[in-house]
Image (cartoon, rainbow, N blue to C red; front, side):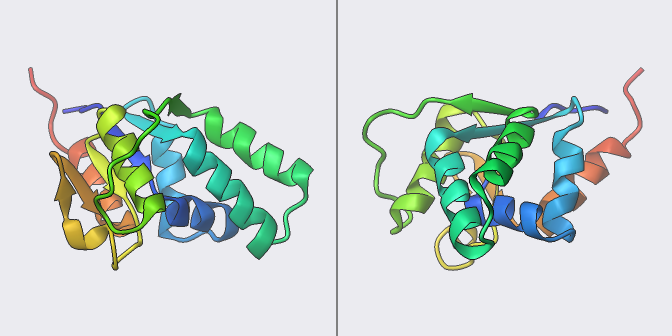
Length: 146
């Protein structure tokens, strides 16, 4: 059963994807597959760029390359002007709003303090990269319906 899975990746997961080749990196390969739709917004991409410059000292050219790669498999949506305060952190509220307005099935995050503790928000499952990887792989291994 090839299900279409729509997902929003938190900034911390995107940052890990760029900097390391662990579990967060592996979702990229999944997000490049036609059955996984990566959804993001300008605010998430902008925050990723800030972190890449500050923490990894990426040059503007290297940041532009990362953004170009990300946008090659990510649908960028526009959020409303006002985002509700839900998670207690404005950056996490943007992730939640992105998932709602992008009709995501999952939010993938490593944020145990604000997001993972919620477990779900408006029907969107909030999971770690490891859990997301298992969920998507398990769906791929199910037999197809005749």
